[in-house]
Length: 356
Ligand SMILES: [Zn+2]
Image 1: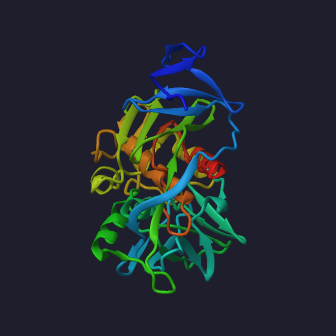
Image 2 (image 1 turned 120 degrees about the vertical axis):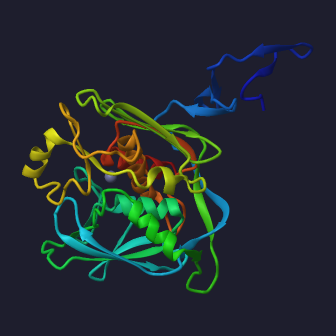
């Protein structure tokens, strides 16, 4: 087979071969499919399908060389929730290998899976059989990044009346969850037969993308998980345009550089959000608030680019919903997101689901 990039030998006649250089981008025909060759920054080449609904397999779940883990102990946290303003209690329990992460709300089990995502503004909600668990993203982000592959998340609220419950917002970040996980530690999980299970991860073979208006998420093959996020608030100069690039699964990176970045909101939008029933539990203690005219109202920030880092935190939580049976949800890829939100994150995971 001809090399995919560089110099290819094209046979023009039986006696003569012609050597032809490939251009940076070059289209070829291969079994009736068209591919464009891209050169990534590391000098590797990979085929890029220009057919949006190409059904060829472009994502595979492969072994990571690590065993599935679970918590070594039990964690309990109580707190007010961001949107409903009600108090709820969350208990994290160790779980068997292969069971993955799921919520247990009054003995109704709601898997942390894209199959149960209900589109709601400003948070990620899981719904199954009429039971809803809201604002799951920060907790799931901490579990995914810290390597908690299997976990039963028991959640209860004394004053929820409509079959909906919400994860406590705590300080608006994932810091408290990470500290609690570090405190109890992790252990290798065993399945119901007492056996270990290999941790699998999705590996991307070709670039994919999703977009809504001027927001997009694109993912490119990469040897490790890499996330780059951009946000742009030209009307709020204190935030403006920010980019943050990370390798969140590298040792301690998530715990030190991402977990403590808090939810942010624009002061001028707070009243409108409250009128539609959102952020009833929001306060200066669980979010950083920025005014278009006055700048940050509750400084100091934990990082100068804290809002952008928080978007990475959210993305990890939302993309963890791609996990299955204790596997990693985050694809081994370079994910580049711009002006995304929970709905676009969910679109991205559904796109990945369509590839596997
Ligand atoms: Zn968030």
